[in-house]
Image (tube, rainbow over all chains, first blue to last red; front, side):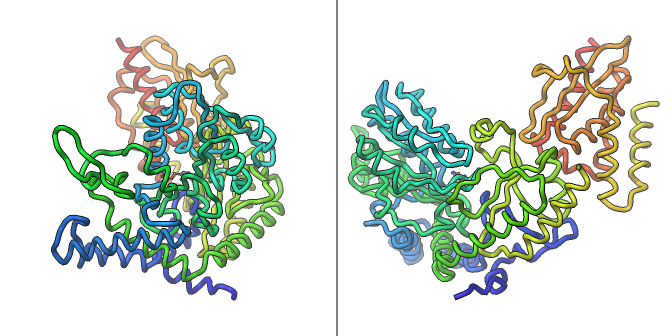
Length: 406
Length: 137
Ligand SMILES: Cc1ncc(COP(=O)(O)O)c(C=O)c1O
């Protein structure tokens, strides 16, 4: 069934406005997606009618808020097909999820001389926490190289894996290049060497069906705000037996069973990793975002974005003088590119004047830029509400930039 | 001309433009007219790294005045750099420190300064003032 994109667009109030006197074309979905009315309503309703702290009050509002927040956990579990809600840790986002794992494994697993393996095409938030873990423990960071196509060098990956490798941390989809990494192949290879695997799914969950049991990674994390949900909320999925062995992260309320000055005992999963009052409205917004994605259908979203990607790539090729950065065979809905002889900052400034929002610069992935010997790119990233007509407007603007600076 | 007079002159020039396109075309012109910085001054010591575009700035003392030479890798940034150099170049250190820069706002290019760090311009203005302090003591 073909999607009725206009009907979907109608659900996103932000899209219906002018920027610099032009209809907004929002192609910065890789940074954060816009929010449908049902997500906005869920948050407004919570603060208007339901606000209360959770997991503690016996009163009506507290119980209701608790039920709703926990419904978000259950919705997430179902959405990614996790085995149990004990495996669904709610965090502030991908960054916090990765830091949680890095910090807890630094206390319990990593030793001097161990190896942590990441890739060249990681977001800074899947690099820096591991560098910090290495500093603390004496473990060594190793990096999987990337081919000119933007695909990971799988031969090098196999060679890099060894008995010292304690963890492999890679993204499912690269935010800088759009590459869909072959994690189905990578995860068992790491397991065969006894290493744990963390997958940064920040760019994947908004665009593809993720089944954590099929993937079988030890940790999988993502952010709600890139999947039509609110900011400040995200998920760490971890295998129960591994989470159980890990020490807690933040100490505080919620994460304890009993506190005595002689020593405290920690709460059961998933609460052990959730110290303090959480982002309750964010959780409720995440539940609405999952409902939105399920109503539209994740397969339909993926299909729409694939069409947009193919169309944009084709049209950009016709412009001429475009260098694509990242041309993997398996690519998700974004194009990273450069215009010959034109600085991304200049192009981005003019596109902004024409009402078009794209991302320019290093995209929080400086090592990728260094690898391709550039300082930044222009990135157009798509969501289900984008249209071919918007791409036409974008291409016309690109042509204008070319004339101005060419 | 004084710093104030130059600023007013720039505002007058930009007043002639009816739309932003002409403004940006003019910035592109200005970027081309900016005397090139000497290659041996285009070094890391003179580099102001914005998140997106880079600016090179060098200053020298010329009696009680300060001379500036600058460049950028992005053309729009370079156009604005050219305006900043035009305002501050060959002025007394004391005047550089005492005068407010209001023309950027007045000609509608404020967004290039508020995108803090992204293009290096905010740091460039700071750096120009630092040079003035250094040369006036
Ligand atoms: C691949 C990838 N990983 C991690 C992140 C960080 O996500 P957040 O800032 O929501 O924690 C992003 C966001 O840009 C991303 O694209």
